[in-house]
Amino acid sequence: MTTETLSSYPQEAPSKDRPSRPSRSSRRFGYVVAVVVNLAILVAVNRWPGWDAVPFLTLDTESVVGLVNASLVISVIVNVVFLAYDPRWFKALGDALTAAVGFVVTWAILVVFPFDFSAYGFDWAALTRFVLVIGIVGSLVTVVVNLVSCARQLARGGRSAGNGW
Figure (tube, rainbow, N blue to C red):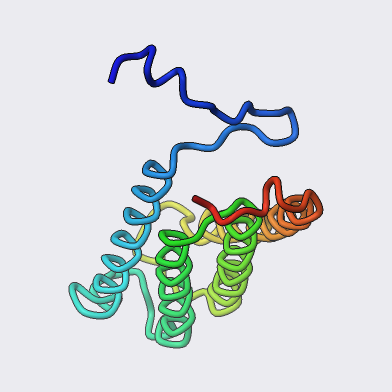
């Protein structure tokens, strides 16, 4: 196809309220990458090399590994569903769900703090706590933003609440 042929297809013009989205194939590629990465992390944490191969993780890690696994599995499921169905409102809802789960996991990691950085000269514990707090705040903001986005998309009705194709 030539450029002229491609440009003759009608395209939805982006509005200030709703910028254009990446193409369906680009979005699907992103979902596949997310699934593969999350599955790889699941294998790395639980099989090889395993979380216990990381020298600064303590035995307290066992108490949060289940939550980390649940978060990874939920992310895989959400991204697999997005492969088939991803209208804007549904994508925002799925992103809010994964961010909410991320909040719970990050909070649990901060509370348990299964790290021992005593062998290192730098204060990695303080930096790790700071990064975890930033992750908690970011997760909460992401949940709120995506729930508002979902509600706005649904309020627009059929124009933006379509089937995602």
